[in-house]
Image (cartoon, rainbow, N blue to C red; front, side):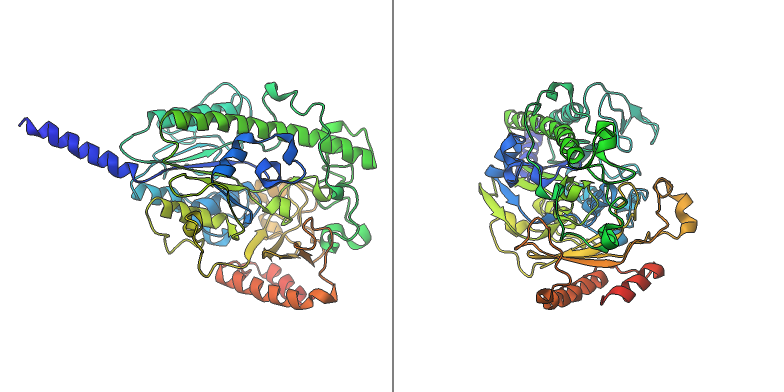
Length: 522
């Protein structure tokens, strides 16, 4: 009988050793943190010392330079990350549609592989995160100060509300550290650690009030002057829609602009652009700084807990952000600053320091990669692909040459017309079909559909082409340039192929399909 405790101890040690062979996976995601607001990616903001902790993480691991979302808006992007699927397959096209409970695929797969699973912070998928062993998530968008949370084990959803005190970035970091400290150590953990910052209204912690206070933030040239950018779909004929499409930093837009929102409408023209931009960027970047400081604290904890080496750390944002480029704010657009996501991976047991890759990945690929890092195989129902070989320093075989994008919420929020397109490593082709997918009779069932001017109106149906090698800032639409007609024909062929292959056609939306067919060869 005395041998039983010995056998149990041996079994527990073997179990612990087996789990030690598998990494913990810490998936960190901010809201709206653009890649060009992260020092490791370079660019005009790189010298502001915004993200020293993330820059070190990048230097010690791998930086992905071609990471893109397939819909630059919070809920659909998060749904694609959870499901490994594109919007028409997982059903989440816009901010109103919840992700079905049975489609919380990633945590389901991680639990099946023996991981303890948790999500802490921003969730924004409406339905309860039932697939996780533990959750403590913000209701909807959540608050920056003294946020409340839905917490598992504190009652029935959605009434399981608990309070907290402090700034949300600090609070969410505290919660993640507490979870890791108190976790079941017989199993590896999979933690989705999601910040609200730096989403608007950019309410930074008061201690950052002086950060950048005396700094002139570098400005994009396209904030002021870009005569060859865009099309009738984004500017109207002869600029007739410039006061309506695309919320602005300057006083350009009639309904939403930072001259009104941040400067009380005091300025005009170039002065409104300059001062609006400075106010916008300083508030936004103070939120970014708060995230980076908290990540430094989290990383130090992982080291002190002895799990730094055996934890895969992934850092990303749920999409990018327009930071004044083309005199635009917010995201939604297929332009680089909005569509591009930062993506860093740190795992010393696999990834060599200072790795950089231009592999063309998107947010449907995140789940397959994490599943294979955990020792599983990519499920057949996922449309994304694992890039595990890249993390191992190997070549991927038969990889995509173009990534698909679609924004559905025509004119809602920031007056962005509905559009789709593809991006290769050199080119970007965009079609603005300019119509909401809902018939007007259905608008009343969707909250956001009733909040903005002109959702029921179509905007011009036009194409844009950008040569990203020659024109990385997308200042010149080359769609009608004879030099690019062969390129355009090949891109349209690939766009059509991907729309069919990914289930992203408009078979269920005949009014949109009619527009696509009519203007395909314009």
